[in-house]
Picture 1 (tube, helix red, strand yellow):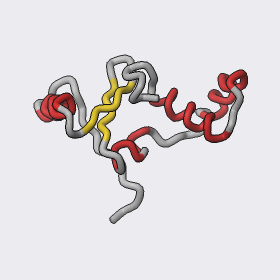
Picture 2 (cartoon, rainbow, N blue to C red):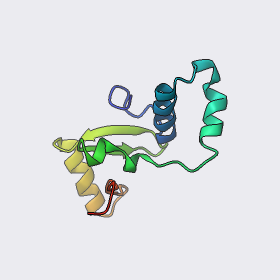
Picture 3 (cartoon, rainbow, N blue to C red):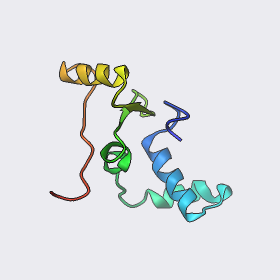
Picture 4 (tube, one colour):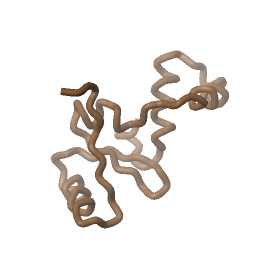
Length: 100
């Protein structure tokens, strides 16, 4: 979803759509189901396997839309350099599943 459509979806869009697909919520009922889904606290994407297991960086634009950035790409290196230079980019590490 994020890979094929960079900067199209927000974190909330991705988290809910994955939930809706997994649980089989019909498309016509998703708007109401989304409100109910987010009425409780939910984990964010830094708790997902995208960064922890698969090595993707997730970049968020100023409107909250997401793009995946592979760790081996020059774009990822540039984002890390910008975060290190205390500019407009903040780096946040992916959360671990358990304490090791």
